[in-house]
Length: 398
Figure 1: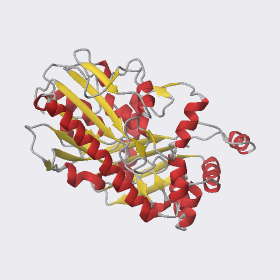
Figure 2: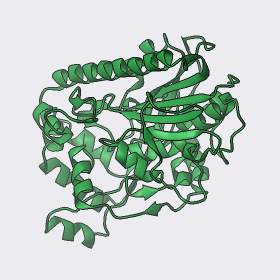
Figure 3: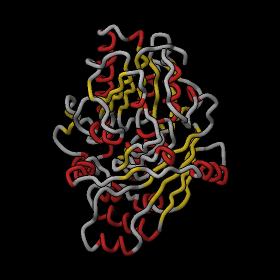
Figure 4: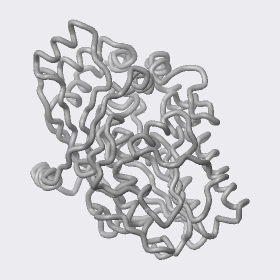
């Protein structure tokens, strides 16, 4: 993508499914069907901003920070690098990347690489204060509790939330035009993961890798780029090399797992290492520790038509956690409402599942995943305070 631009805006709308907005985005620029690196926000951001797959980026949760030997877009020395202004979960992403400078698109100074995270389709659907990226009236957990037996209304709310968030994105495009920067800025619109809207008995994301959560859009916007839907496949890790190729100045992005514009990409890897942010009430927490603690990993490989998903962990501890979720609001209400308990249990516990019509079989998928995991990096993990843990719980994370 030889554009030789002076500025790059990476705009990440949270929890936007590919099928929710791809048709709209294709009127703005080349739009790629994209494999998200993870079903969990921080892990996907780790790949989006480093170009490394999750096992190599070392970022598996909001508890992790970028390892010293891993470069991100915030390490580009010849550009002013920054992240969106303070407020909401932008703070959690900033903490992962060593607290980069914070500013707004109105104030970012060229030449810049500016990263923005906005609500998109995240719960509570269509329920955010836009100036601060904070809840308007209820938390995600409260919203899910209220809407669990109203899936049709949840879908309506989700669509309205995505539309409202896209209106904000278009406002940002207008700011670039008003500042005279549109011709010299590559704008990237993407999402960290998709969203389940009642499929398989779930709302939200994180717990399961399915097409609704794995497939997201990526659109590149610049006057020289023709709006269209692009054939082929893109992956989060392809973003960094693609952006670097479009910059006027040569930049050091380090080694990446991506390719420019996803050239000749046939498959993409999605990874979740399930990290607990808090503890359960006794005696459940003691019982969990007695059974070895909770280690659950979802590894999956996808092409444009489907994928193979492998859930790894202990059946005993996974079953225990599932039971806890089933007894809690709102998760339990969701799966009980649609009589999807057995189906969701099979998805949550260790085993294999396939979705769609992938062009490769189970053994091929496992072999490719094994190769990816050979170079796994140990991430830097730190404790989070009680307030942060509570906020993550309110956002719908376990």
